Amino acid sequence: MTPTVRRVTINDIPEMKRKGEKITMLTAYDYPTARIVDKCGIPLILVGDSLGNVILGYENTIPVTMDVMIHHTKAVVRGTEHALVIGDMPFMTYHISVEDALRNAARFIQEAGTQAVKLEGGATVADKVRRIVECGIPVMGHIGLTPQSINQFGGHKIQGKTAEAAKKLLDDALALEQAGAFAVVFETIPAPLATLITQKLKIPTIGIGAGAGCDGQVQVINDILGMFSDFIPKHAKQYAKLGDIMSSTLAEYFEDVKAGRFPTEQQSFPMDETALKELKADKN
Image (cartoon, rainbow, N blue to C red; front, side):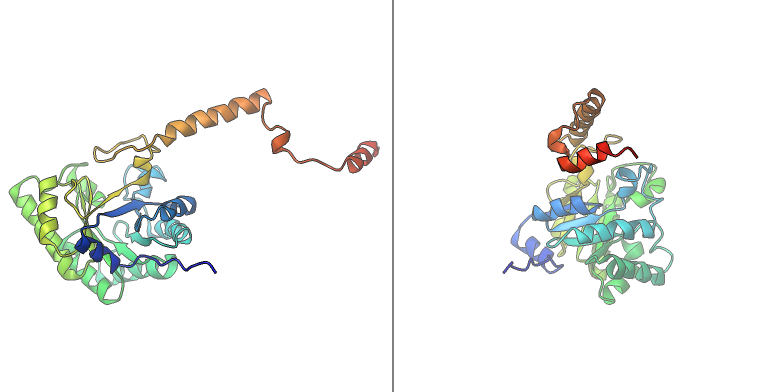
């Protein structure tokens, strides 16, 4: 009898922080990628609105809609058994009112099958975080460089560089913790600041461009696999160059077809000789 695979829960994540075990999170946007990530034992999968950039080809994440997120998230959930799947709530799906935030968070849980959602923002969204959590939906926070506010930031800029800005990030992190978030992402903030806030928080911190002092790390899978070359963030390490491998492979396929080297008998299906002879003899 095949043993049942237990899915990671939000209770496991703070326990990892307590034990000093580093937490790994990766993005995934489709079924086959999610299966691979899940089988590697990575405990957290984020279906990020970063799919707007790396999958759909948008300049930023702002055009990504709730329906697009649900579509991709369903595929990721179907591809997982072990990882806790987190749905990234897109631009303006939780900002206008608590009611909007609850409705859209519920769609991730009910329609897409995620186990949690992620919201960008600190103290300004704490009331939404609190109500979503009170309704039984786990929430991961996200502060620092929040891509949905890219127009306000004026580009991909490091956040929290001044004492005032650093204090605001600390206050934002504490506000999210007090609102009931089970973890918080720090994006593109100075490493010493991320370490300091991590030490002050009871909940786990997940860094992306925030140094090694966070409780865990998250990366966009297309960046670390070398599948997205439009923009390579400083914080991303390319563990492979799959884009180059794909290019050379497809070029080889193209040349094989042109030269008649593909397909061969190995990739073809035989036919009964008698039936073939009858077919050839048929004058109609």
